[in-house]
Image (cartoon, rainbow, N blue to C red; front, side, top):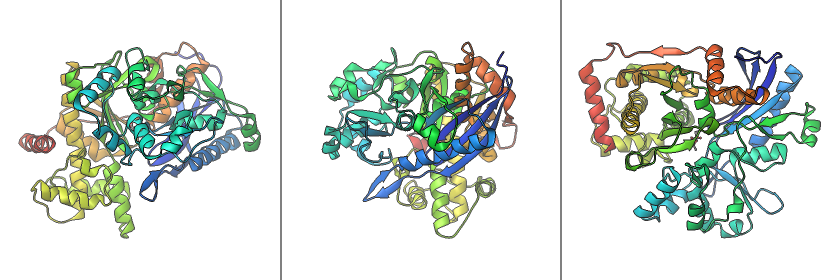
Amino acid sequence: MSNLKTMKNCVGFDCGNSSIRIILGQYDGHTIRMELIHQVENQEIEINGILYWDILNIFQELKVGLQKVYQEYGFIDSVGMCTWGIDFGLMDSAGHLLGNPLSYRNTLGEQSLSELKEEQKEYIFRKTGILNNRINSLYQILGVRKNFPERVAISKKCLLIPDLLLYMFTGIMGTEISIASTTQLLNMVPKEYSQEILEMFKLDPSMFLPMTNHGEIFGYLKDSLAKSLKINQLPFVCVPSHDTASAVTAVPAEEKDFIFISSGTWSLIGTELETPIINKMVYESEFTNEGGVFGSITLLKNSTGMFILQKIKRELQAQGEHYTWDELEQISLKFSENAPLINPNDADFFNPASMIKAILDYFQRTKQDYDGSTSTIIASVYKSLALSYCEALTQISKVTGKQYNTIHIIGGGARNNHLNQLTADFTGKTVLAGPEEAASLGNIGVQLKYFEKDLSLNAIREIVKKSVTIKSFTSGNRLDKHKIQKELWKFKALTQ
Ligand code: LRH
């Protein structure tokens, strides 16, 4: 139990694929009061067929958020950075950024991965424990080297998105295990850069940064920034800077073995382990062993999440049809029963020019009846997401040999009552939804470790439990058991 005496104002930076959020967590020794201080949309920008992130704008917005916290609360004790994984910026020898970071939704990674032989892919998985995913930094770095050789020839350091933002704030170049693991350049057993993989691809080890431990100081806000923002000097604490790992930190689990679904643009479906599982079953079922908080491993599947609905929502908006998330959910509730299915992880949905057209083509290709309405498309996506969760859960149980009673749905997607209910219906498990601000809560929870050195992960989870409201969903007899079984079979047939 905490013995911190005074209120701490800890700021969580949470940069996701679709939004940038600055959250204040006020810790009074028992609970964390969360307040969203500043939020703006995030989106890739396309120029000449290439997708970029507007990293300077992200930096600007984080500064705005920090300043707002200070203006309202008068003092900031610490800050923690977390962002989406995988993407990176390249730096020259003087520490200048060589161009805007590219988005993993480009085709660079796909090209590089497709050039590898099956034995090479299996070798890389065995050496790293990480799934050979086209989006991994490794395949993107190889793609950049092939397509933009001049840029790579003068780059001296590779900074992942949180590392890059931390460098802008503190002037320090460094990283930590959770984000570094998304490169696929680490061997997850000693949790160090894999010499074999670096040598295999002739990558210079000095490009990649040293790692700091969670709960320790990463660096301090540059004096020049503190002055120009007119805020107090403050430390950046090293937190799991991969948003997934910070979110898993905030799972309000009672039990040691639990299932989480970190639900946002992606749905990361997995469990927490002490050591990675690296075997054929994990490889074939496409799970990955990412770095988690305080040396843990998150064994997870990187499954498509709200991305498909985000794209549909934007497309409908461009056609003048505006829907709120609540309205989309209501539509799904009404039209779910007879909606056809999609496999959300089908390559056709990775980044199509029109998501609606990609879904219509999919219904046709898989010969499913479709009534022609937009409502049915929306209902189809919700139902298919829940079915994809169910399939991943079955695979996790096979891989770990464990049965799980509860699924924790965390992150922004936990707001989605209908999806939570469908997940309970299809899996037959209890779904506990929340916290929605899991990434920021985990981030802020780990910052507290800097102030109180012996704070354990369990103690952080206790604080989270006391600080949030969790909603529970059970399957009951809402849906006919035969119908559920039929949907599960139909979905399985689409994913084989
Ligand atoms: C989720 C996430 C996921 C990555 C993807 C790029 O935000 O970090 O874990 O694989 O974005």
